[in-house]
Image (cartoon, rainbow, N blue to C red; front, side, top):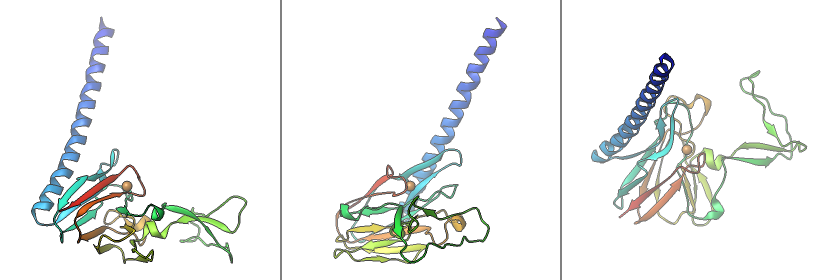
Length: 219
Ligand SMILES: [Cu+2]
């Protein structure tokens, strides 16, 4: 009998904890949604890339879809509690799809020194190939535009702004890091603002978490 009572108490305790955790999670998501709505009401449309809490990070865009008029701008930020990077990446030409890390040939030298000296870091050389390293891809990390002719150029971080003509092949925010947490990712970005000049539906994804997708509907 006592054991049965104990089991009941245990089950009740588990249910209470699960309910509390769910409520906190829901409240976090709802407050993110509300922040986005409030931002839009002030005439500035903000979309959050990521968010959530330290133990339950959110890998999603909030809101996932926004609707704007031609000439309006959308700003993406990263409100994550941890220094989790996200990108806002429009791939209009599949040939311009890319990865966050990539192998690169180093024909002249493979001598790298770590910064700061003595830190627990080492560049990744492809096993068996001393002249090939794996490195972070600049076209993912740095704000990058590839125009209709295929010419790539970078925009200056950390708060790049770009006016989209609608003829680009690739438009990427670079790695968005929560403000104040850039130490682990020097030279990364905090926000990315795009002004849309042509009506249409613009879908984008995060290169770090490819299941993170969103869209901007321009009327
Ligand atoms: Cu992401």
